[in-house]
Length: 139
Image (cartoon, rainbow, N blue to C red; front, side, top):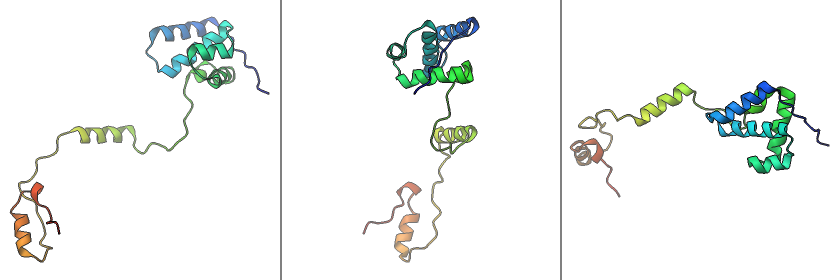
């Protein structure tokens, strides 16, 4: 049996949610949760709210539950999502993006290659070409 969660907003909470919706500078999910809480407080049913706000019934249920159990801020905020932890910190990600978007350093006119190939004519042909053109001959 699903417990019923009754949402009773006081006037400061209503004012905060109304101002949030009027401002529009919040993530869409947070705005939808604010709409849900205001609609529940107005006395609409879960199915009507889900259809009006264009969310699933479980979203309405979870939002009401979080408001009753943890308060307004918890009801509006995101729960941690499942999945792997981030591999880069914000600073590392910024460095990676800056490096990828910057122009490459100037290229030397010739590559430095060690003479590992036994065919000296092949080695000489490689050494005489700029880096971008030095390729191993196809066989």
